Image (cartoon, rainbow, N blue to C red; front, side, top):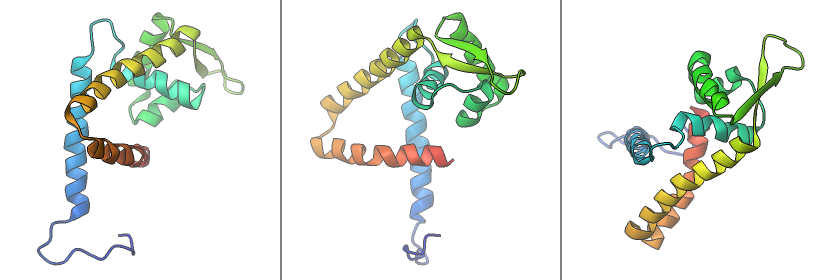
Length: 154
């Protein structure tokens, strides 16, 4: 427990556990609705996630991508194979390990990841504009980096 935070008094709900459960439920529902809203022909969430990782972190192995997403290398391999088939990623020889290859975005992959991000961002932006106050958007903007950090630490 963080020493700056006093322990919960007897009978008080554990704020951290309640927050963890509400985040799990809310983020899960958000992910499902974003996936459901995807139009036919758009990249899947796993495909966009893999492309986004390569865009942000640079070239890496399939195993490296799998580790970042906390999935098996076999599952990531299926996603990478589909991205290769679409011409969005390319493989090159690993500098020190001939058993591995390095994945990189193609120019088409770079364009796809940016357009994919924009499609989702456009949908979320529309909902934020229609249904949230400026103060609520400010709270979400402040929470976003914390949620990203939480995801990285899990």
